[in-house]
Length: 282
Image (cartoon, rainbow, N blue to C red):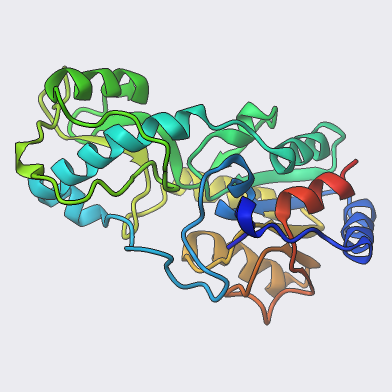
């Protein structure tokens, strides 16, 4: 979890000093970010301070692939939830990480987020561990489409359905209330008629091996690990911190609430990610 705007906890001077010392002591920092770094951009996180779900658990990979009813429900909600995610802009935390990278202070940036905000802030070579929400892939022929194009397809096929909203969730999904999802039309791949899926790793799905390999390569060339805005409750990110601890690398976490790796982390800063990073990387 991190720092929703209404619950922002500003870092103390002592916390900023500790984070600054960490960032200046180590020159090849492996940075792992989670949903908490994007809450300052208006994108809510999944979990509470104890690491539990704030609402209903996100859609599962197998349910999306195997059940048309689940795909209808996902795309109907995504049609309304995608525009506010697409309008989101980087916050001071994203820009701070980009500054750290620009001055050569990080070895690799790995994010569990699917919003693309690190790239929008200027970071390069980002490993999007869970993919990107602005891309769509056909599960049959691997045709790639932009999410904006798919949005146009959804709107054309579903006149009268809500196609924009103020609220959002981390995966672009929103609650629509009591609606008849069976009446919703799901577009197929325009090339082969196959199933279209957001190019993200749903819960229960596997992170592509190439992304994991890039992460391992980055960790191998690092002298410290910074975790920003992640509870590390999912294995995809936790594995890197566990391995860093096994190797004896210093690990610092900036996160609101507990993490799965509390026993492995050397230093913890319980404060707003964006404000902490912005102050330390100034």
